[in-house]
Amino acid sequence: MQRNRLLALRAAPALAAVAASALILLAPVAQAQGPGHHHGSGFFPKAIAAVKAKLNLTSAQQLAWDNAVAHARTVHQNARESRGQVHEAMRAELAKPEPNLAAVAALADDVEQQNRSARKQVRDEWLAFYNALSPTQKAIVRDVLTERMARADSFRDRMHRHLHERGRGANG
Image: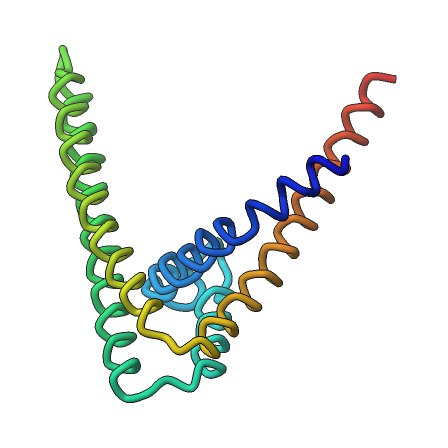
């Protein structure tokens, strides 16, 4: 137990960096979906707006934020459209007597590669934004991420217990 705690403490800085990237990188993409489009709730846009308000951005940081959000929205929309093209290609192939599933798979692979490249560009843009924050602003991001990770861990633990209890009840 003590060894696990020591390993967790050693990994904390790296984990915090990954978590910061996740919040900064993924949340604007969720924000790009608009309220009500992330699993039926507007939670992520509200959470990001709250973090943004706490950051007290300079005009240069605000411009970088706005550009990153716009880029994330564009990438998100393009990804949705390209996945729709794969879906339509699959429908067209399945309508044939002998569908060419390899062609659809190749299209899906190409689309995924393009989408992955675009997501990486957005991620790099958000990392540049994060790197331009002041130490105080980075501390705010760290604190928000720490809280969110704790909530996610708590949720995961509750779900694990719930599923374990259901499994035990079903087995006797």
